[in-house]
Structures are given as structure tokens and as C-alpha cells.
Length: 195
Image (tube, rainbow, N blue to C red):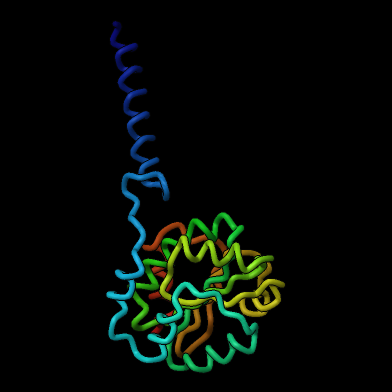
């Protein structure tokens, strides 16, 4: 084999190795992905939460009704706490992809920050409930089949959208998928836990 052909073969092997390593970093492809937290592990991380936040954790994974009045009553009860609202839908591929990030960050910060879901635009509760059973989170979601509440809260008809409401200050709206728990955590620190 000539030197130039050997160099080409080594370069191809190196590129293939880089692609393989990169693929192991993608969510759902194994390798460096982090396994989901069990409900028991989430509960252990959230033990000792203040009463208003503990009430959220007791409803973890539930799909709540009541529309705008129920969500606004909940938000009133959470005054003094930063709030993160995740607008999602079970049919939304980017929403499904980021749910693991929300699961981890909500369990990690749920003793200081209130997390809420807003299932916006799902035509059936059954699909949303099945999704929540398969992807357990430590906070409830409010059911918004028409999408009107989601539009009111996020100022957007798209999903996913995340709203960060600091205890004091101006809310921040992030449109689009969170690619990682690390990025979501950065935004929780930057926009929700504002001093």
C-alpha cells in the first residue's frame, strides 16, 4: 500500500471514529446519554421542599383540568417562588426530545423553583396521559386542548416554549427545544433564579 493510500485509509478510520463518538452523544442513542430518573429518585431529590412546591411534587405527572382559572390560581399560590412553565404536546417531537432535560432539572431545582407543564394543543387526554406515564416528571401539567391558554401564557402558537418567571422581575420566553439539561439549567439560573 502506498503512503498516500495508507494516509487516506487512516483518515477514513479517524472520521468514522469521530462520527461514532458523536452519535453516542445524541439523546436516545446510548453511550453518554443519562438514564431517566425514576419517580422514587425524583422524590428523594425533592424531599424537604417548601409546602407550595411539595404540593406540586405530589401531583407530579398528573394532567390537570380547570383551564386558565386553575392555572392562574396555582400561580397565585406560588407567589414568591420563581416559576418555569414548559408548554408541550405529546405529538410534538422536539417536546418529547427535551422532556428528559426537564425531568432532571426539575428534580435538581424543584426545592427552589416551581415547575409546571402546559399540555397545549393535544386533542386527547389519553395521548397526553400515556406520554406522562412513560416520561415521569415531578410536576403536574395543565390540559389546554384548544391551545388558547398556551398562546396566552407563552405569546406563541408553537411548541415547545418555556416561560421563566422570576420571583421578582420580568418573565423571559424561550422558544424551541432545549438540547440538553445543562442548557436548561443555565437558563433556569439566568432567568428564573435572578437575584
